[in-house]
Image (cartoon, rainbow, N blue to C red):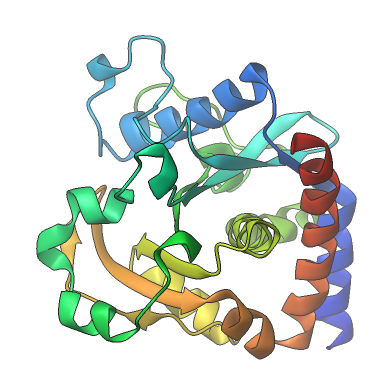
Length: 250
């Protein structure tokens, strides 16, 4: 790990914290970020479908959600959820199976011979636009939150928000033993994760699903075994926070 990478991770840990959602207020904070990103900013969903400005769906109740929170301002910078398969509760399909069936290489997925109860999906990873725009940059055309006014040192850490959200979801796969992991991802995220040693296997074709996405698969242990040392240090920090909250959540 270089000194620069080490400093970046230390700075991120200084400015942010990770929380596992356990209250209605926390859940609404996640849905609010999703609404601003998916509905207002990128128009993946119609705004009038969610008059309360909270983007939710049928899978949220069975999911575990994590928030990335800016400590000083108390703002939610990002969110992610883990959707477990729970066949004993009648939840037979994961979101990507229900909505993206035509894009899946079912022959390839079947060849993995996965135990159904260990499957899950990472989804609804979103970073609030306020933490993606540069200071002084205009707000969205909908008049959304302006960018965060902060130092350059602080702003450098914003690049780790999406990565830390993914790592939080990865921690949840380990804690819940849902270690066969699927995700519908935009092209940039697999490339970003691959640079850190996390190599998802593509298991289908592109489709328009909240933007152009494709289905991917990875085993949790593979992600952990191949993480670059600098990312593993960040993961260990994220895991500690998620595990702390999960102990009380159960």
